[in-house]
Image 1: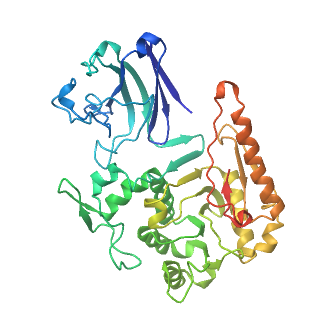
Image 2: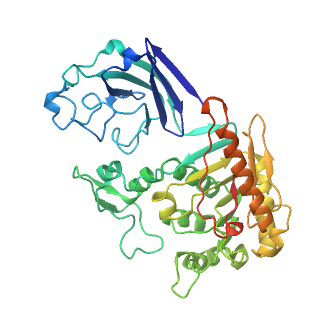
Image 3: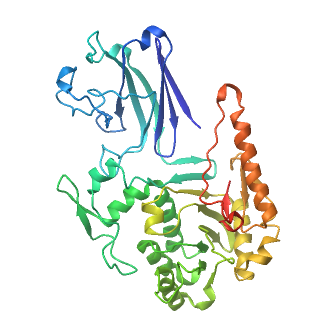
Length: 427
């Protein structure tokens, strides 16, 4: 992870680069510098735009009792300093609108203090520390890592799109027009479903559409798709345009296949019309095929793969907190191509897959282009599933024993009941 450090006197600021976001961490190294500390003011200078102060959801009950900048709202951090030694800045939450700038950002962090009467004193620029860091979608070598915002219940979402906005029209058809007006925000400005989707889907949405649009535009490219939830209208439109250059394995568990004709059933019918019945298979590995994988081929050679936790649905991309991994690497893509072909040939059957080499071991990669990666595919038999979970626990315990408690681990468990049948997921 890229990090930049800045110091002045007792004040140190470290900026950590994320996926189009920045983690800021502050430290005051002396007892005197922490005396009567009120918090931290953060100013942000995006590339080519005017600087602004971050906002704090907590503000003084009586702002008039404290030093205030009258040109800033009471919740601006110049008027209501942050009461934390860390903060994550995601451009576009409250400033810069729906399309924030990417590039070189400068963060100016200033410690703020109370006087003897517990009144906030004016800001002292002499204490400020600047750090400059690149803010842009994350990539490392041939890997792109991206995330949805997952902020549908946040104040930032409400300010952009209102409290009661809908994510799709009532009784919407399968491929509804996302350029239609979706609502009006608190400032009286209208917005479309597409604008709402772009903001909520964040970089994960960009990576998904980047791949699908590239395949649609280039007749030399073909693709294989594993899908569980499949209902995002613009995704469906692109898949139908790609048509016979795609093969699709689509889950047919009860949620996605019934007399009520859920979106997956309706899409399958449309896809057969444009691509033929031989280009799509339905299956669920005895339970459900909870996969989200796109393999891209050029002249029948795998060149790129997208995977992760993001279902290709309105809720998967725009409501839930999810991630996407894109490997622009032929070796990783070849593994996923083998996975798809195996499942395709086995008609999405769990029994033969569980004993295949794909399901019974981890598949490791690591080079100058590909960061260290271990990939395991489910469904597993019980022994392999337990072995995988034990390895995760061992890794977490090892990180906990790192010197100075500086280890780190990020892991999310959706469900342990029946874990052997859960989706194919990198770990």
